[in-house]
Amino acid sequence: MRRIFSGGPYEAKIGYARAVVAGGFVHVAGTVGQGDTVTEQCVSALSIIEKALAEAGATFADAVRVTYYLPDAREFEPCWPILSATFGANPPAATMIECGLIDPKYRIEIELTALAPQAA
Image (cartoon, rainbow, N blue to C red; front, top):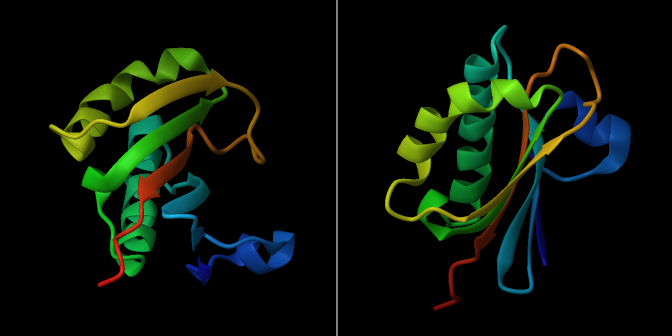
């Protein structure tokens, strides 16, 4: 098992890793991004997730499951083009949940699981 940290302030404060490589998968923690709009935060969160995947040796093409959490489900549709461009021809299974997030400034949180690269 391997833990990946991004150095974000909440990792130490709350006690979690950005991602954990275990059981043949890369489990990426729920990730929020920066920005004022849901689309800015979506792009930012995906960038953070992409870095964690890269550190694990994976890409978005390896994603098998993604969950989107939004305080307002109506804000999900503006993210669709971003998500479609991110996953392209390799879309994962997906779920969107309307719920409260840790801070009202956040408009979207993304949690992802990907296949881990096979050891050579």
